Image (cartoon, rainbow over all chains, first blue to last red; front, side, top):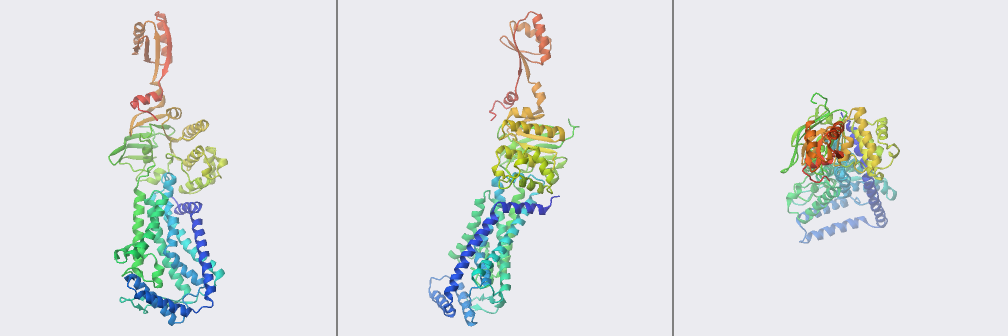
Length: 327
Length: 305
């Protein structure tokens, strides 16, 4: 009866007209510009430095830290992994930090995927329903001859579209902005990934693969896209549950930041591995960074995130289609 | 009445929240071409009832059929016959009037530009259509809300407090518009108000609602006719009362004043008869009880606003 594409068009127009997407792009552009500039300065200083000495120095620093008793178990684990990774690069005579635009764009998936991109998606998604409550327009939206689930589905679809665009434009901006100041070539450079920490804390090289950077970047962006779709699904649930946009954005922010703090403060409380924030930095885990808790393989993280997304959507649709709309 | 066509039938609508019954067994029906008034003080349950009619609130008990479609089972079919404004006419303030109309037209299937021009000109908003809604006055938003409700030519129009925020000229225009929509297009229009004068001028029938119940339903004209009284001040009230009783009416006496229900013609005849019988008539006045007085009587004198 009603055309679903037209509903998505409505939601897309509202998203653009509320300037949410413009704000997100402006934030991305300004942050990326600052980081690209800092990379450029770093490059200038690195020009006459010996990277092998630096990597060796970094390894020694990790070793010293590991000798101290104050290092807790999970931190020690990731220190050991990082140390072994650097050693690997050193052995193969590859400068792990030579900044190029492709490398910068690749790193963006990890660096931004941890907090920045989820926050931006929360800004996009958290008021997609609650703004209609706050502005009183829900009374019109829900009295049109369209079933409520279709309305929420159109909002969700529009949010997924903007989530994809945010990541895509973020990646392109990262490459575009950094290409101005850094070497724009280098998509073919080899990347090593798949370092695994064995049970005894040693780094296992069995699963290490060598990939061209572009392939590695595609995988990392794919994983980040999946993580962001999950964030979008959770933020639409918060948007349904909270009446005010500020409350739903706030809830999302505290979940993201609180979850991160939790893994730092109480690494022994392993039940926290079932929180979605623990599994969120998929590109990090893919690149070889050790997850904060035992038993968190990449597959476990993906499955966990999928369960969270499905659960959040189930709550969102159930509440949205059943609730009474009072003034 | 039962043979007449109905566009909306509400049966035994009840809404219970916690242990409070907000709407209690409300039943009424709308016919094509009539303006039906929902009259009651704030908090009487008018808005809750309207929210149930348009699917915002699920009734605890009772059923709603619109154009023959059950609101719960055939939600889309039922609501495609309805245009409404619930409480305040909130539209998207960051979009223009035209973009708002296009938004809601898309929800009905497709945007037809002639349709948007048509509804905009009906509410005299054509020349402000390109402005953002945030620059509109409350009256203009009210008119844009009505324009939105008229998209898709609904058979039933439900307007909550349509006179809110309008100046007297605006109210007159809207009243004329609603009357003509009912008369010319055969629409059923449900209007709620706490302003009695408004209902009296706009509606054919009225339901008086108080504490979640409908106290009475009737034609506005009948209610008015039933509440017309003659007041006579005479020198010999007993003799006059005798004469009035002789004409089949039962007067109430206060000192030298008689009060009894009567029309204009009967009154003229009666005065002639009194004069002929030598009773002096000092004062004769036709007294019309306003809807407000009836309402106060019906609701036990509680404040209306």
